[in-house]
Image (cartoon, rainbow, N blue to C red; front, side, top):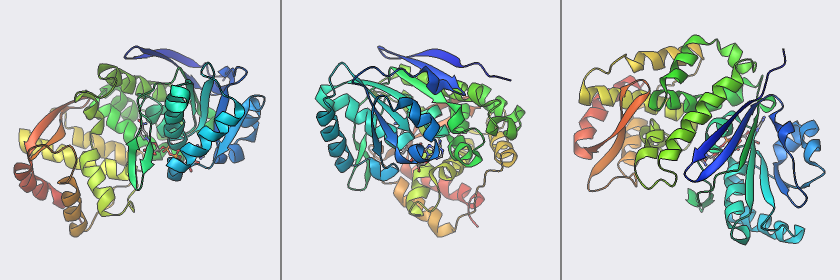
Length: 356
Ligand SMILES: NC(=O)c1ccc[n+]([C@@H]2O[C@H](COP(=O)([O-])OP(=O)(O)OC[C@H]3O[C@@H](n4cnc5c(N)ncnc54)[C@H](O)[C@@H]3O)[C@@H](O)[C@H]2O)c1
């Protein structure tokens, strides 16, 4: 059965983004003369029939992966856009995952002090997360996203044909969807509990699931479009501990797995601080992890101790207080400041559940 495209307007600050999602969403793409599309080399290889559709417009192939978010790629891209004569009235598009998106957004917002910007994200993570909210940037030395701007795309075309049937690309981004559910919208958790994984992976239930996530992220970004306050910090649920684990294992644990472990740990910390959590979100998390066959490996005690050391150096620690998202019930989280000295024994107490 042919699926209809889902379409919605997303307001983030003063900016309106048109978000289109479903199989073949890319067919909505209409490049104007002078527009340029930045294409991931992997997408060029894997989906030649899709890339063909944009060949009548100027396009530049970029080798993707984290190394694309560099000053060298930025310089190369701007030089090529100058050679192509791209004007301020043209739009720069990207066709690729989050890394190509972060690079392209930064170029679009700075080249000639800003040209048009639109997106065709091709990973599950970029469709539900990185394409939304306007953050972009490149890495300086080994520090991620050190330089960047806020710039929301005018149009996002999330074409599910890029990801349907690809379990690994969907499972890679699933932890961020689970995070959206616990932090922002319990409907996402209910959906995950009630839907067979195969229906998401095959594509049958994928567009509505992506749409729920994209809108939840858009809504929270709209409350604080340029991250002046703490609202967007809710999106950090699982990341305080998660980043510590990634750093302590030198990225041997993937970002998604570290976020899953981080959410579990932060739920345990919340219940230690505030007592039992309504609706037992930890049981829901464990159920989803099992149902979707996500793996939470056990870590050596010394790795978890190192993770604490990294956490304690977090740049968000002010006057000895760390800001952590505390879950009140599934779909509802608030930020709490807690002194590191108070948190440390609690972290140590719950550490056992993640260690081997
Ligand atoms: N701007 C934001 O708000 C935000 C939010 C979250 C993450 N990010 C950034 O996003 C990046 C991660 O994004 P990502 O997970 O999309 O990674 P990615 O762009 O590196 O893509 C992962 C891999 O998948 C490949 N790929 C892309 N589309 C594919 C497809 N349809 N089929 C098969 N392979 C495909 C890519 O070539 C790459 O090798 C990080 O740099 C992270 O910092 C940004």
